[in-house]
Image 1: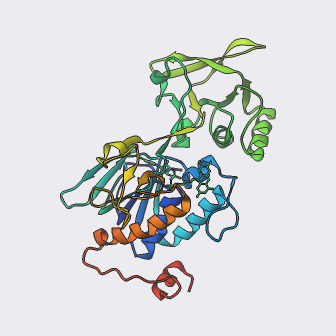
Image 2 (image 1 turned 60 degrees about the vertical axis):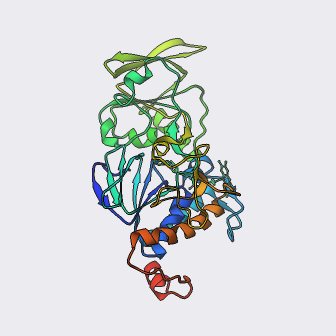
Image 3 (image 1 turned 45 degrees about the vertical axis):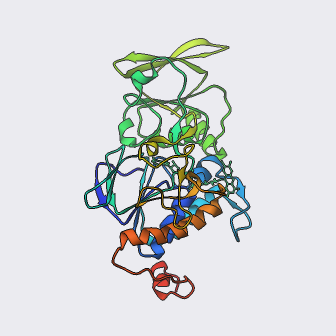
Length: 346
Ligand SMILES: Cc1cc2nc3c(=O)[nH]c(=O)nc-3n(C[C@H](O)[C@H](O)[C@H](O)COP(=O)(O)OP(=O)(O)OC[C@H]3O[C@@H](n4cnc5c(N)ncnc54)[C@H](O)[C@@H]3O)c2cc1C
């Protein structure tokens, strides 16, 4: 679940993006004693690994002979955990401004405010945005009674909810929201689902128990007034057209990646990538660093292992902003008792 938003925080480093590279950055910053807050528009860590290929085997992570996208995300979370990062999921890093103190203030679309001396952009291919259905009057209902994510389950308590889609997100929310809503319909164009088998089975059990109404057809029209949905008109070859009543709709048609608000932060973009110095991965704006798929430099390879290397050098660059009066002492994890104590590995 996301945090409630609208709160203020101070930290050493704000990381934008909880993809594999943003997650490893928490660890590298933590080794140097720097704390992090991490913002991601997704509802879980892992970026592309968790969202695009969670069950595929990655074969080129050094020393890991074979690891799935999901396992890598989990292991990176475990590796970062001793440094107690704070995550702000399901929030878009939206506005960035420089304060008179020289620090940065980041504001998310939920109104969370975070201040820090350093920003690390680990935005990968950009923020994941929902694919929208091509329907007339869509904008009239969006964010009023039609949504693309669940930020607070309470918002749907006692409502008659229609979920559209046939993948993991649609099925997960059918199963998770069903106990709190008054009525639940699932609409998909065919009676075949792409989700994990266990969730598909759970959904069919709820249909058999009469707790979910499964509707097979294409959505033709949205019906309602002043942003409030009353029903959705469906169509298929056998039944023709029919209406399904609802007062809230959740559309899960997959995600696409867009650069988003980062494009407005004055980062001297080149083809939607941020040029950096390979010495420390700082951008042309002092105090803003960029690592992972979003950064650009001669010879850049969009590989997870490249992002890991970039994280280590970036952390050393960040240290000078976060601790301007301290000297950085380079230590190996094998020989530093301070680091071992922090990680609990002595
Ligand atoms: C199908 C596929 C297979 C792949 N296989 C391999 C492989 O075998 N080996 C390998 O090394 N690499 C592989 N890759 C590439 C690898 O996934 C990427 O290099 C890696 O994910 C980059 O990590 P990242 O953390 O930089 O970015 P991402 O994983 O893209 O994460 C960036 C995160 O930032 C978030 N974000 C961006 N902007 C904002 C914002 N404004 N507000 C909030 N959140 C924001 C996004 O939501 C996202 O979660 C593969 C990629 C794909 C698509």
